Length: 387
Image (cartoon, rainbow, N blue to C red; front, top):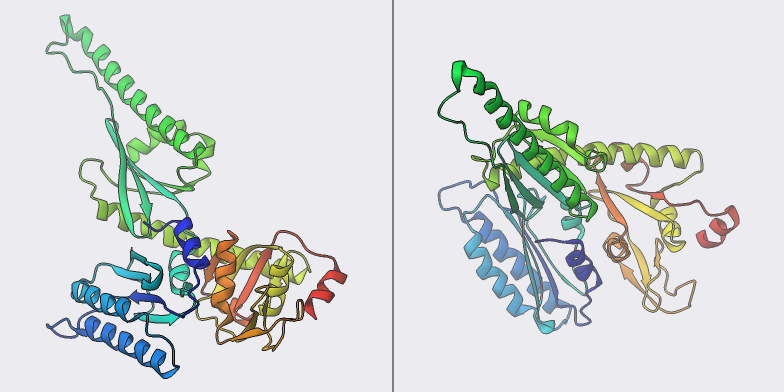
């Protein structure tokens, strides 16, 4: 399962020999019955990576990992349900493999000193912990949802009162029996709401989806704690007896996609408004890097195709939007970067700063990158760091 901790581990990894392999496999719709398109693409990517490494005189320490990726592609070929991400460095004994929704832009392979995380972060978009409860008046199932899997964590069943054989003299007991059944069902739904409250207060989820029929929702909703309601992602029609893991995943993915679209749009509007009023908004690479250096960034907004050249200090790690030979802070040598955004994302992930992919022309017009700030520094400080 992909976790924030796993992504931070990948972001912190460095291979001095340049043997860090990042492989993204996006299944394709087959163009013929042989279904070999994916395998051919994976082989081409591996051969090209080896050729580039040999051309630059680098150690081919990644050969074993690339051959292992080719073997993995053989197993994946013909499977169009899931994408795959692999991060490997054989010299350091590292191999991380994750299943993903099949929504990557394309299959890609990278070989370098650091893992290439931009496609992963663009797909996950914040990685909220999401729980799902599928319930009726007698039973409930609780699931934990991650981008690479759905796992059922618990089941809750009501001890519903049995209907007696007779309704009593002239049917007088029928009403009492029905009320006992209704009381048991209500008690069950209260128990479900208490279970959800317990999970929420212990950090078990950031978002909650509910699968049930309308009549069950009308009984359950009044008992949900406000702390749980604040995290409500949405609701869909489902039944705890017939719901499968794949059905739950598909319905929740639809809710998550809509939630992310609304949230990214709202964040962009907030950042643009704050920047216009010279408040807590930073637009463009230069302002974002200056804000990062001051420790101001709360959330980073990034266009999916954003890329920019720059440099990074070998000693202090400072990023600059200019191709400088020496760091203006410590005077040490810098490395030229073909795409500065990769190192920027790694720093943000290690710091626990949220990265939000945004597909909106308004962000492109603002430079393709922006940030919502926790505070706005004084004007004099901004001038000194912008030099």
